[in-house]
Length: 473
Image (cartoon, rainbow, N blue to C red; front, side):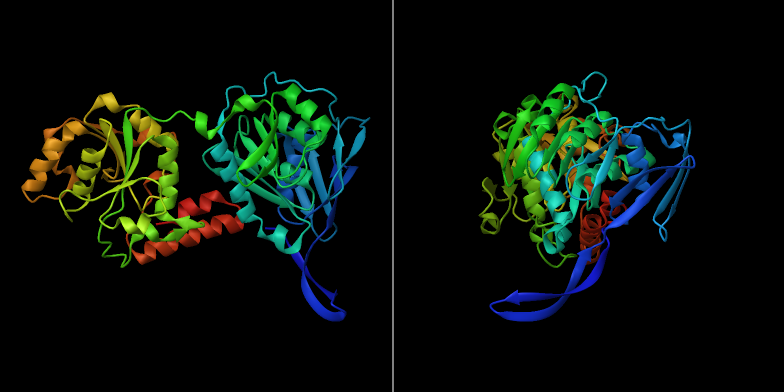
């Protein structure tokens, strides 16, 4: 996170002078010495300087990988970064002072760009995913609103935020992301980046060098930035606020909500029932990251399916969610009865069923499972010690076997499996899409909820999306 220093000041309001103190952003000059020679001074924020320096060198074209960095030492007391790289820095460099907050410098600023070999061809994003990435950036940037003077940027792949950076210079945020991605081995080609600051020429040039497919800002791009983005094949978005945006070039890479292809022949079913005995309260209503669990689940399901049903015996709890609510047909007989009711009420031949306490379901995992519909009456992923019946696809061909099981007083979901065809999707298959298994993360006890909530908040505070995944239940 950005570092702050306490500053005393006076506020004059309504003729009254009041002494106050508040944090202010630190401005840190960092002198770069490369292979024993002075190169430039960066004006920046003082945190994670290794990412900044590495990204700066990468985006100036001086290095391509960590192997090109022979050594990188930073003396914070003297504001000096001593760097040795393979090869030599060109003798005649034409520095360009970059615009915006936090004076920056760029070398070899291009006059023309090309999309050839940039790695962004074929990348398509939903407008919903772009709005979500900007919302998450805003959530992480409370400091910008509270103290002013800080810019931020976030990198996403259409499903989640991958990297986040803050700095007094908007151009420095992209350098930081480039450096961190290089050290962590994250391929940036075909990804999208949102920023709080204006998009100018050097921002587009850096995005093109990284192979980014989309660059978006809360504010405006310059005319020259639009021209370069058009040449490079980068989708350029400005005034990304709330639920609207301006698209300045290559709009074909953004898929509007009303054009989004939904999964045919499948109904989305959310099980909101259950007694939640171990939790002690209704799990579907627990808050996390600004919304209830069931709101996160419904938002994803509504993007995927034309019809979404909530199975609940308390429909009034979800009156604000715009979909059908249906009760159990076998009243209070557990999750199997919920799946049975969802299937019976679905207008399609198949239903994808998910529990209300899985707020991080992955749309790509769901699409992959639904694409395997012809493989069995039940298509179910295997995770951990066994299958995940509350994150699976069921056909109406299962209804008779479910009823026979329920009539016999048996409540286990897998109890009817021997009577139908079950296709198990191995961990090796779905983990290529969701390697952390976040899709199946659920909660059953207050302790699990607190860990998951704290991990989610910690991920926002630290800018590390992996923290939510490793520290949760």
